[in-house]
Image (cartoon, rainbow, N blue to C red; front, side, top):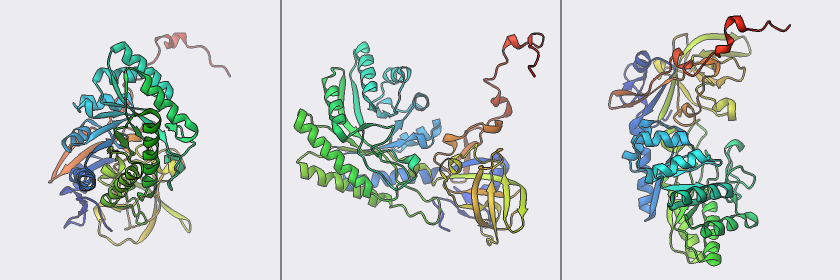
Length: 446
């Protein structure tokens, strides 16, 4: 099995990451446990930088932080020279708390509240990616009240459907995101933005979907976006300076996944931009890309401890773990599939088929169905690969389960970046109304 980053086997037959034994990490930090390979993340960041520098002169790489956001990950991205894509006031607040440069932040989202817009304006966020006319008018009014000028990009839907789960398609015509290129809607919003004195329209943005395996659809999107930029210049005289093509490059979750390498992916989309600009006689814009999953996904490992094992003769053998859909809703949400190892028996032969079941009270809480593993017993450690994106970010307290700890590992050193929640944490916002004193309770209605 090919393993990403610094994930490997050690002399004890245990899985290790960043020269740290996963069995020892589980003993020290407990389970469930999320482990991030620091070197693996930094390597991916540099792959994007190197690929863009080799193929295009003027570019930006932004981390799409919805994949996984924390103070530590924002600090790492700043160290690697990336900008930031945030989609909520909470992500923005976290980035600011990490002292991320606000001028390098792009604020996305299809329904930004007035409070969120004000937070971003107060912080001096560099760019707003405007999703709809209502947001444009709100932003213009708030900017006028502050006597400030705001840089924006317009999010457009180019009408491209990609081959991925329909829940993570975002660029098709029927989408909650963005302004359609069809029917003149996008051009009307461009003209309105250009007419607003406090708004500076610097570019356009699209994001066609996630877990996309090739650059083909991105090349098509780039051509349509440049065509629209040419139409804007022809109708308004405005030369748009930035073209943001979003993110969405796939990673390896299972043996059948074959994503295009970053280098050829970037070459494909930058060649498409250059070809389209030559065709329409436009100067090359700044190209912006927003990888998220492809930066942190394969660098993450989720580790669980096996508890009950239930064999149904002739049907299935269930191995239950101490986590599941509360910390990883992806299998239940859109049938995500994974590879896994037994961390304490990493190079043992795979002799039996198991279904890895979570501990939530839902029949659908199945993490992996029918996976061949070494024979396992209670106490063994299941390590799920490619767990770095859209797992902890979507974790919940369903069934009142505390969220796991998150650590980074590098060069034999492990450090906590998010501490494990405790039972007392689960109660920190709970209140019993004073009016519910025992003497005031009404008799039960039968």
